Image 1 (cartoon, rainbow, N blue to C red):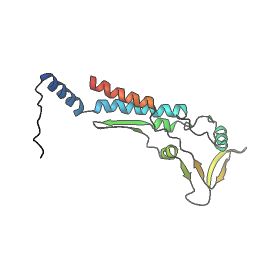
Image 2: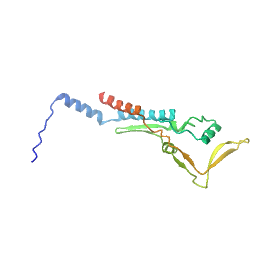
Image 3: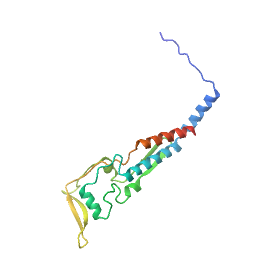
Image 4: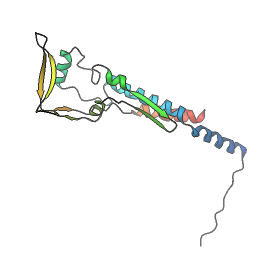
Length: 171
């Protein structure tokens, strides 16, 4: 037959005060969440700057040639015109922190996949201009885009978030 529970009641002003301070800090975590979302955004921008960690798959020879023909750096992956990088935002509230992008082509670069024609049999990819200035195209049945996860935290970013949490609780 189980016995009644014996309880210890804490009647210590210092412990009570410390618990009240902890509760007041955790009632509104928005300042902490803002810090975390900024760390996340910086991590994403760093991933784009360095070409992924681990390094993303190289561009195909065709893509490299297309970029060169258009005057872009053929070695800069996910950085052709800077729209992806410029679209990275962060947001935070009292119980959430996020960083990401809302551009339509973000998911295909993050997860990889195939792009197929919506109408007709081919995709028409601009490949440059001829001598008369007329745009030339390459016809493809599909384009395969390898995953290049840019929305990713590194171990150092996770440490920075952990430190931000510890510092917030100490303040």
